Image (cartoon, rainbow, N blue to C red; front, side, top):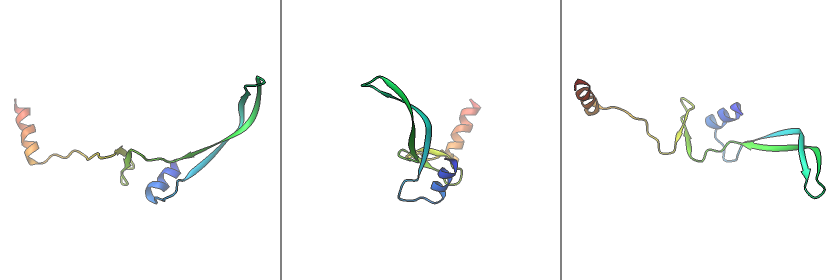
Length: 85
């Protein structure tokens, strides 16, 4: 999954990248006969980025609309004033 994530960030595609994971010993129950039996199950996992944005430099994800906080000169003057109190 890690390589799938890195591939998606570095080379995005329109279609979803899926990874199939097979569990050969999955317990199932037949509710009509109350029998329990073992069978295989395959789950399909994929990458979904709905509400988060991935920074391509640091590979960290942030909420959609997030902007990093930066201090300008006016803000630094206010910080220094507060520290002097």
